[in-house]
Amino acid sequence: MKKTFKLSHPTIKYPRLIEAAKSDVKKYLKRERNKTLPDYADYWGFDCRFGQTEDSAESIYVGQINEKISFAESQEWTSFYLEILATPAQRTAHEQDDVEAE
Image (tube, rainbow, N blue to C red):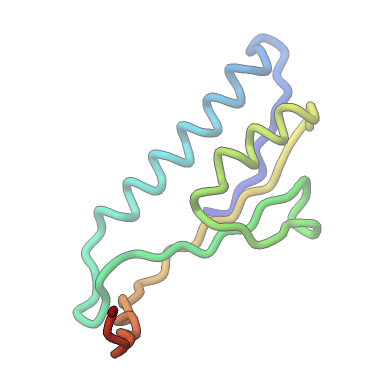
């Protein structure tokens, strides 16, 4: 998803537009996570970018999306850009320390 969300409308109030944007993101993530994974992958990872415009967008984590949209609401932005790209990923094993606890 690469989308610029407009936060101004003649009849729809600002808080409803923010809720609609959050809902669109939530639906998109759910739809992408339910897609069939390739054989080599364990889960869907997401590469995300957020900003006022596409040019000023910075990389963020998936868990920060709602926080960033709320930030845009607090700053009363008239629009924001959000990019979410699903990528198949594989979990890596954690390094186990062989240090015995005494």
